[in-house]
Image (cartoon, rainbow, N blue to C red; front, top):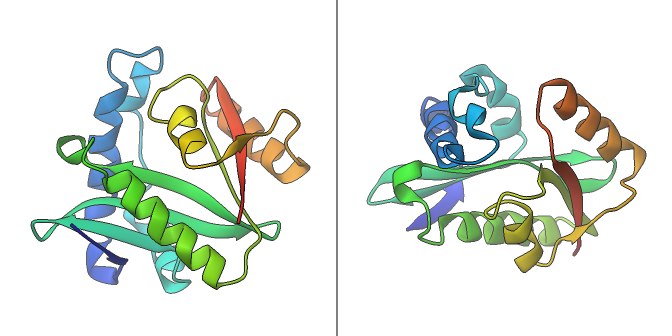
Length: 163
């Protein structure tokens, strides 16, 4: 497996990976996510241009990605997605490691994200990486959670990691 910054050529694969990753939600109380819309390819060029997207290749196939952007002075994880057939192989961890290493190199003091509280490969996964649940998220993260709730994403939480 190889983790690298995403290029323009990777863009068509990213929505497909997100859709495939959604299959893991089948059989959970968030099963509808498997059939929900995903980010369109045109969402990624600004993130790639800013150096905020990494991909993981397995056998020369893009198997997962992480997208990030600065939010209120923090290194914010927008999305971590690993294709369904590539899950449970350490790809998500490798992507997080690469992105967080860049955040540290760039001088960020914190990383943030929002995620599902009760889905085992969401909040519990991030907690194992050192992220802490924010009982009272700052205004910007509270606003993100409110936007997610308006889209039907329930049982969400905000988390932060000191870098």
